[in-house]
Amino acid sequence: AGAARRVGGWGQPDVGRTVQEARARGGGLIVGEGKGGVLGGGVAEAVVGAGGGLQGRGDGLGRGPRRQEAEGGVENRYIVHKGRLAALPGGPGAAITTPLLSLGAKLRILGEPWRKRGTDEQESFGSFIARRFGPQVLERFAEPFASGIYAGVPERMEMASCFPKIWKAEREYGSVIGGMGKMAKARRQAGEPRKKMATISFDDGNRALVESLEQWLGDRLRLDTPVAQVDPLQGGGFRVQLGSGESLECDTLVVAAPAPKAKDFLAEGFADIAHELEPIPFLDLASIHLALDKKDVPETLRGFGFLIPRQESRSPVLGCLYSSQIFAGRAQEDRMLFRLLLGGARNPDFDPEDRESHVAAARSTFADLTGIETEAQLIHHQVWPRALPLYEPGHQARLARLESLTARTPGLYLTGVSYGGSSVPRCIENARLLAERLASSPAPQATT
Image (cartoon, rainbow, N blue to C red; front, top):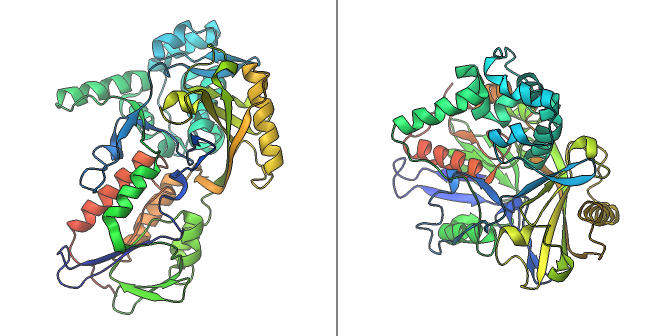
């Protein structure tokens, strides 16, 4: 939670700002740990995008972290098909020639531009993909992609919330394929530079970015200071009660905590907002880092990693990243590091505390799918209870209600993973837009 008390005029240098961080270190779930000669990652080990919120981050923050782009040769991505790793097609054209789809499924892809627009504003990702591209594309490509990005399942993911650009393409142009092409053409005609899609991280992992931000904030960042309760002040503003018993008063409060935490400390003073936050589900995840000597890894096992479709799943493992192949410095020169992600919406009975079963599932799944007989060394096991939100159908309607509620409470703002995107670039971009909005806004005025 961020709090600001207006000392002079709003937006002037004498505005006091503090960031209350519940954890003993900044960065939350994006910060990994280094153990056993390797550098592990947090929930977000790699960032995939066209720059977005990360563009220019680190500039002016003292120690600007050096970006790492993915190593060459990691474009190869795999999916489990009939119990074996198969290369994913690299684009729409390759999808027409891939052996992973039947002739009928390929004809459905070609016919996508002529299908009618959908009418359900709360349509699920699964329904959208099946309707426009067919069930095979959903089962073999879209479903594992959804589990790899959101740890979700297609039927519980709202299309407009999870993939807004694709949703917009159909809504505005009547076709995903045609619409995405026309949107790209419009950007070129408007003189927007073409953004290169890239997989990036930082030297020393995401913690380098977090440490730069911590240094820039200085004593405005207060670690190990969880918020216990927030109440409105008579006449406007907020009283923030900390877990230590200390209280702060502020004119503006930015709540960046995940919905389950925010719901708890807003429940007393802002029950209507807490009521809207309570149903947003969060998913349990676990991560296993395994390492092998390079000599034990066949040359055929090169690329970004693999995903496991639901119909191919035999364990709670969702997929695997070839971490040391994606970024340099993730392992010693003679070793290779692999990271397997477990849990998510696909595994409702997943117990995040059952370490023994996590390790066993990771090792057996990795061995079965790669054919490597040498037992991989366990490097790190990390559990994240309630790690990622699931944007279920109705999420956009919920956001509209929250916007209406916060508009009636001057100075209160919500941001973070629970609302408009859970990726690192989306969270940073949304926070930056909010900061610009606050900097250009007049002081909050009390309302009756």
